[in-house]
Length: 358
Ligand code: QUE
Image (cartoon, rainbow, N blue to C red; front, side):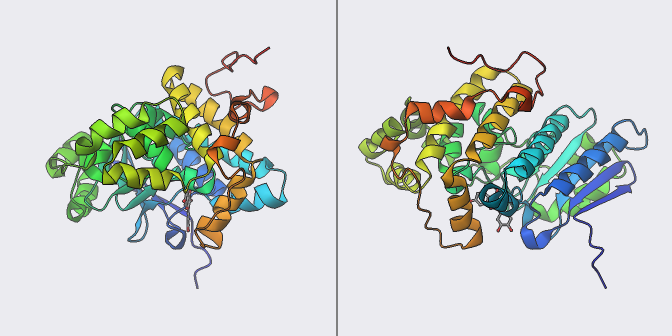
């Protein structure tokens, strides 16, 4: 009967054009064809005077989007040449930049789970809505990967070292912390989302949101800020761990234990990526950097092993290689940032790739 199920539903309701991610069994994880469909829709709507607002939502009860199609990346990294993943990321990061520059209100309902690639299609929008059900994370270090889709820029811009903490640990945050960290703009209780969506058909996005928003609830980060800032300001992952263990508090100890379960290579590449992103100045330059990092990650053993352990076999017991931080050298980290020559993403324009040393 079905078999015609579209992974992205597009429809216009009054003034608002709707994008519904529609793979609820995979928690709406983004694959390449979905990225292309969304990009085509934005092209059509960008100059269509009948479209005043774009709205992105996820089908099903669990949330907006769990990330990218990481199983496809696994198979490509293990059995292929990596070109399919590189082509996917190229189009995905282009879409992320396009969303950030979209000239009309781009309203993202960040209800339920929003991770990885889901952050990329929501948190660059101009009207980002969170609810009491929101669980937002960049969990890549747990699969031997590095935050992408502009995540290193968003997290690098968060207050103090909160973003460094989120990038390294992959911790999930709720609505209050998402607003505090700059990943969201407005809090709307999930029970009011239906009426918000109805109102977007009839009035400017700003007015519709104002009718339903409430003050965001207080998150946990504000009270954790002091030890997070002092520990995560360190220059190396080893020093961050030392400071967390020396701190003595139970939360700091638990955070150190979490870090010790993550890929050592991914942790070091992630710390360098977030620090460098802060100095790059534009989302486009950050996405160009992330593309270099993601392509480099494809040829590390930890990406295949991490996806196997967390997503495919779900034994949650990845065997990282190298297994310890001490074995990951500065040269290993530097390789993630090497310019790609004629394979650069090139969003920031020609001549913006970093100089090669030497
Ligand atoms: C880290 C990630 C992802 C993840 C788990 C991590 C990720 C992702 C998924 C995912 C998506 C769809 C599914 C599913 C898992 O999991 O990016 O089971 O159906 O897409 O620890 O970055």
